[in-house]
Length: 330
Image (tube, rainbow, N blue to C red; front, side, top):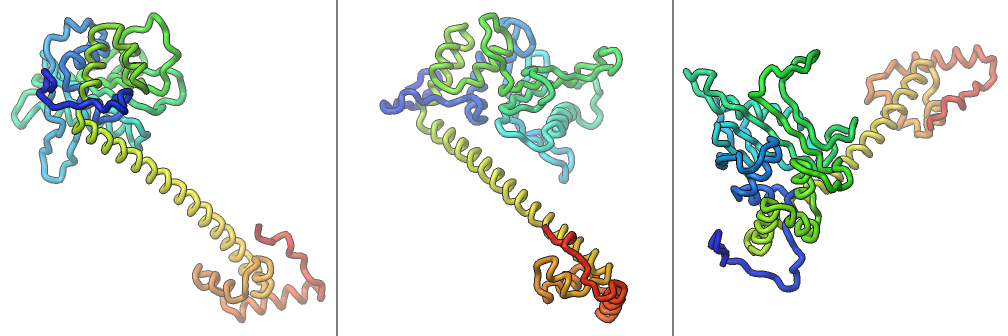
């Protein structure tokens, strides 16, 4: 029985090395329930000592809708500080279309969620979004951490800090440095891939130690482990489906491209007055198939007219067969 949670736990002797990894969003959410861990991560993010973080509390992760047809905002982890500052943490391991716009949407919802009709704007408190990404979001440089806010594009002077974005790209972490500190150390902890890595980092300070112990407790809880593995399987299946759909889409696009190229070639030969038999030979199709191309693509010009132009070409060539091999479809 865990003294802290009262949850029944059981170690699997044949799987002592198993430990949940923080990059799985289920595990990250559970880890952030621990207030000491929250303080450690937030202090590193804000560049202050953990002792300066007086209080943090978890907020509901579903942002309210003002109107029925509004889009819901569902956050991973939403924390409120003692001074009213709100921080949204999002763990994302796979590349996501429109991630930048999603960030702006969620951040804007966090701001508007604070005021109601008739409220003064001075009620709005600072909102921070933190993207923890296990993929490269900014490929143009090697910076693994960046802070983004509203500022003057010429002078760099901050216009307002009421909205702030922090992007942590785990995939761009540099080789480990003995003098690492702050958020880089936490990024390395969150990016760890084994119990051994996490255990080594746990020796660095009490906050990493608490995070490791929390992961150990979660991993020993059979119910939590089942939820973790279910979520992990869902993520893997979703990635496999996306990969399959991408491959099928690419193959279909290539097929359509080939057909469009062939259609354009046949259309050009129709316009040039080339007979159906010659087009079929060049395009390596039957005459019936060529006629279907003509009708289906609305290029039909009338058989009599085509035959007339074909006869004119024949007469102009004075009986010599035209060399049309350059038109052969590849």
